[in-house]
Length: 177
Image (cartoon, rainbow, N blue to C red; front, side, top):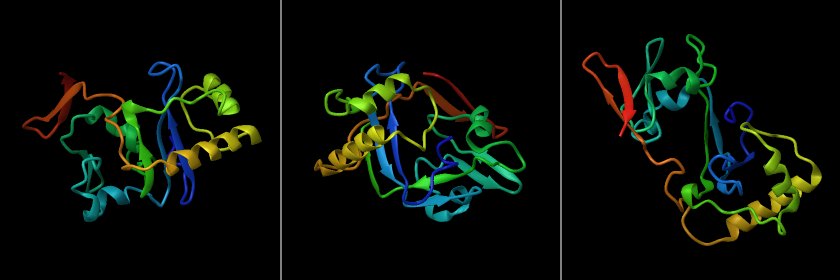
């Protein structure tokens, strides 16, 4: 999970997996401004109204808020096991580009080492790169942020395919649309 090792000042890149896009297009690039640990994001009223604040801190745990993407079954995967919830970390960025479904193709002639590395990757994160890959990433970062325009430039990579609702007992469940 990328939120665990990421720290302030780190640069994160999100590339599409082979099952989404065989060219492994760039979905997002972001510089981490702040890392909120131990569920702080879900407890701080400043973030409560954000659409991505999908969990609410309760006494001794978390509850999922109604949203189109996640249900109760996602809580442990996203936040970790009770009582520690060791995955309840969030990284914040003000310097980012999100391309989503409008992802940027990674051009082989321009970024040869990165293109080769992406072909061989599986899901997960990498923190150490060979010098040629690092040089390609630095060049890609520079190019992405030189382009004028808004920070959000595309719709989500995965359109909402589920409808999530809270029942009378407070349980959130999701079903295909």
